[in-house]
Amino acid sequence: MTNRNKYDATFKLEVARMVVDQGLSVAQVAKEMNVGRTAVDRWSAQYKAELLGETGVGKPLTIEQQKIRQLEQENRQLRLDNELLKKVSAFFARELK
Image 1 (cartoon, rainbow, N blue to C red):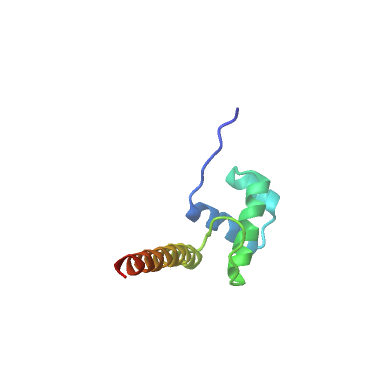
Image 2 (tube, rainbow, N blue to C red; image 1 turned 60 degrees about the horizontal axis):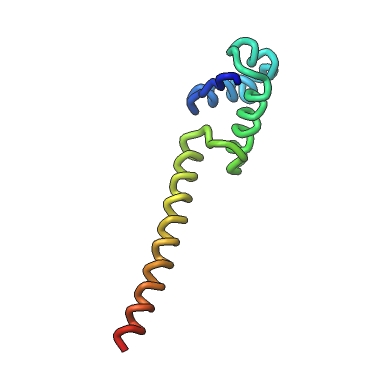
């Protein structure tokens, strides 16, 4: 079994910018940064999607997309909590009658 390297979002963003913004090839950046070509390709695709305002498929790279993802998760949780409170209040309202 091989050990997988874990990279933080800052490093991934830097690598993706080298490909997208600076126009370097994926192979060149992968070799230079000692990272797999597939990873560089995925990070670049994620960064391109985020530049277009889309969410992409992986973990967000830019600060804005990270914040949006966090707010979406909070929103989902608050909606679930709100639905639960509605059900509980309806239950107790029936019990009091």
